Image (cartoon, rainbow, N blue to C red):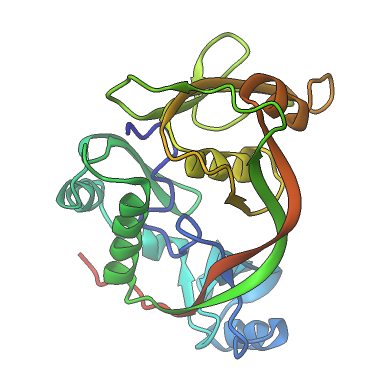
Length: 277
């Protein structure tokens, strides 16, 4: 599977959100407690304090008068200015990804508090193995401690429609999934209301994940019973039509049914500052 632009975003960030959603630990600090912790550490004019991706985040003015974005450990209250993450050099990121088995690593860039890169994954690695690699990088670099919880959330089941599937068994050697822009260009994520996806060697489990991401219909479960891998193109537009439900039925012979599904989530317990280079 070739990973495209932004697929490795957050690989060396402070969150586990790329792998699974992150929830707030029950004993995490409250907003008021985090505000007090930041003030005790010398930060002033603290605002936009929000909990996201397993960390408290805020805009503030540091003790030396600089305006900074800080991430705060939800248990200890220790602040991590964005420049802490940026202590990783481009060489460090390149080496870490290469050690994990990625090839043709390029366009390594630090932006918005995260390192991003483009690369090709190990040819034999599955999607879950890739996510596990990235998770392990996070745990090792930031000494992350977490635990998992399972809960039921409103989502969907992917099923075969009444008249049967309209899928073509894949003969491609390479697994590839890309969004197509209005001018035929390949994109890493959908843009606008008109969404078009080209998939090669795609399983129903991967299609389920795609629908959860691009269709914005919550977590899903595969109930198609189809175990092969397929090539297909899927296009929909919720404003001008056809909508996602109609497109799935008419183009792929599939349907989504709203129902509650069990979702595994990681709760971030703590994280440490990365060691200086």
